[in-house]
Image 1 (cartoon, rainbow, N blue to C red):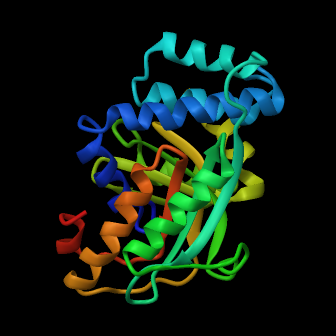
Image 2 (image 1 turned 135 degrees about the vertical axis):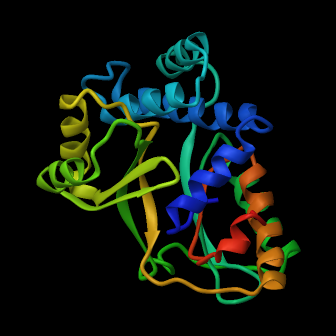
Length: 247
């Protein structure tokens, strides 16, 4: 579940990583295969593949699995993935939900996504309906151990960062989509490997929910996240400290 509260996202990923590691592996390996088919198997010339491999390593994904995903992308056999997006609203509170998918059967995926929204009283909209709510941003997450906050922040700002936050032992850097490559090169120059680096859909406006509303929306978000064809799910919920433990 991805929202603007990046520390919630970090905590959630850490909390469920062990129990759902296989699910994360499936999604990141699919991203590697899609990246190879899109722009080739050389990470130096394929930024998307380089990021996907880096993120797979950040999850301690076995090297053999990564290599198989690359070979799968190079082969002419097997699934040919199509990237899809779906936009809609949750069952309460005006929560905006943006879904990114990669599928070998778009009919199946749209049926599954629509069924999830219908079952949990959400409403699936048309593509583009949430453009005013979400914008693409580069987000880098890395352990903060050994970093001097002030000097590191200044270096990142010089490289194009819009925001640098330190919390819970992590540093999160946010930048404009256009500056993603510059930040990546700056970190490489500093010999820093992010635990996660990706373009995310960051909401411009947030909504607050009470605990009962949150429980209703969470049911929908969890079903969407568990779908094998869904890569990422974004929302614009502003969670309280106590609600962070609920997700």
